[in-house]
Amino acid sequence: MSSAALTLGPADILAQSLLRLPQLVRIHQPNNKIFVENLALFQSALKTLWAQEGQVDLRVHRGRLYINKARLNFAPSLQVTAAKLMEFFETRNFFGFSFTPKDDLSSDDTLSFIRVVNSCQPQAEPAKYLSEALKESWAKPILDDNFKITYLFTDEPATSGRPLVWNSTPTSEGSKAKRHYSRAMAELTKLNSSLTGATGLVNFAKSRRVVQDMAESLFRNENILLSLSTIREYDDYTCSHCVNVAILSMCLGRRLGLGKMDVATLGLGGLFHDLGKVDIPIDLIRKPGKFTDLEYEEVKKHPLNSVCRILSLNADHGFKAKLLLPPYEHHLNLNLSGYPESSRRVPLSLFGRIVAITDLYDALTSSRSYRPVPISPEKALEIMIKKSGVEIDSLLLKVFINMVGVYPVGTILLLDTRQVVMVKSTPTTAEGGRPQAYVLEKEDSDIRKGELVDLAEKDHNGQFLRNILYCFHPTEFGLMPTDVLL
Ligand SMILES: [Fe+2]
Ligand SMILES: [Fe+2]
Image 1: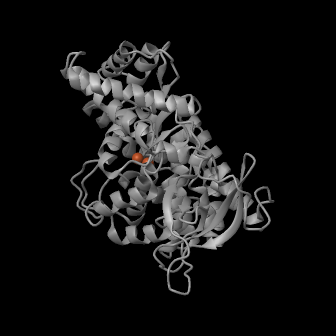
Image 2: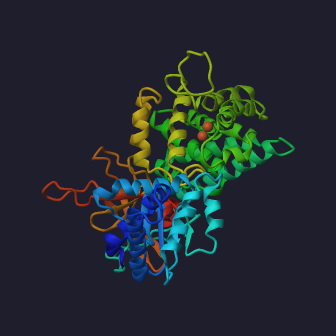
């Protein structure tokens, strides 16, 4: 494995010169000394990497830079450069560059590549423009985030000696919960298409039953339902987002001591909170980049649209009335800023405050068209803590953080023992938020569940046996948490 070698000079230099050259070419003539020096640095770094690696893919993935499969660990003095380079890619909606070895790479080749990179910025779709302009080039933009990290695993055989249970039959509770999730997704997809379709007929009773089943599951085993919420269907963001918001809201409601019926009502409110988005053109919902003022005004209508949509559902009026507040209030802040704007001074409802928290958390931690790289759970919670007491109910947020944990169920952690683990459950005691987790073991192309370890475990000197180095989203490993945990 050559990852160690790649953390040295050439990768640093490549990143630094790739960031500098587009700026330098704007202010200097091609024969300028600084420009020529940087051009030479870029070329020699690339040639060194080509000699080591063959094809060189420099890419950003979930807030980190990689060359091929190796993560780049920059020296502290280069951290700003790394952050700026990632921003450079992210703001132009591509993931990096793929450099194919070219024996006779000349300064002219590099200069014309840099000029193309520079000219993509004012384009409406910079990534598309780049891919077209560099179609025949030795340097091409990376347009997809189809990337799996495998280098963390050593090639040594598993040492735990425990039986591998990757393909074991799921527990009946687990498979039930999984079924509920798929049914909720299927119902919501149907609901969306029926709302946008000609008939307008909606099987509201079915959605209600699905959520009630999920509530039943929750009262039996919270961790199973929580692990389901880390699943994301990337091609159908709105549906999986709504199901996740429903699950997280129900779990939070249960933690607050709500009864089964209230939890189910809250879940339905969460499931329908963004229903009004069906009234907004899909291109606008999926728009990469920022909204114009006019577009934002259109998007801001969706809470009220949701209310209207719920009112038009074929169901009992009294019950529908109970579902209206979370959709109406989920973009209103605790201090009543946010939208829809109104002159009301009535505090937000409990269900509204709950869905506001779960909606924000799920939106931050998932990939979106305007932010292909999701924010990590720790970072998302950090952002939310900053809003606590002003925009978000601080007490509810505390309970929520306790519930999802800094390392939510399904998260993958790299430990200082070089073990890679998947979080099984959030801690019941507050031992530094340290969860229980399964050691993941690699066998051929499969990743399997091994030994269960408690990260709160200490040695006889009172030192933790295992410490967390990095935290990853399961999709970085191409894993579904439920496949491993259930
Ligand atoms: Fe919303
Ligand atoms: Fe939402």
